Image (tube, rainbow, N blue to C red; front, side, top):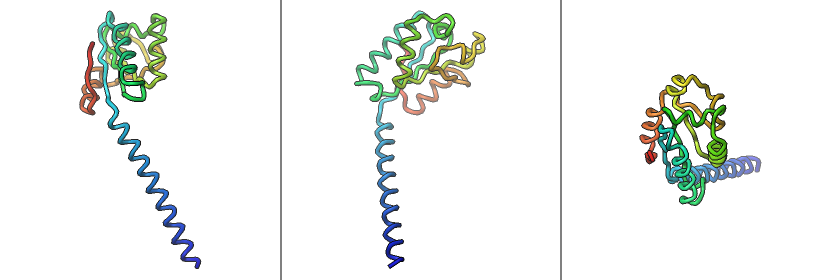
Length: 149
């Protein structure tokens, strides 16, 4: 009788593990099917326009949970995201997008050129250590659609 209980317990645990793995696989498949987009921003005069595009993109897809968006910023546009001098609207919008799931990456090369660190930028940024254009190419190789408004 003791062996039977051990065997039944083993089958129960195995069944639970298989069910959990199947649930995880379905979640990963749903994430893999979610559209992925990288926005390329380097022009200072297009910051507001690109942030508007991102807002429209989230809304057009039915919400941030329906699309993965990464914003890669380099060159003069990064100045718009310096915490000390950022426009209040830009700071608010970036914060809202970050809370909704947007990933924002600052070009490490541009950061060195502008002599800024991550703490000098608005919250929500990460660093594209090897450069913004390298990050964009990496994302494209992972299936991200490329947009440069």
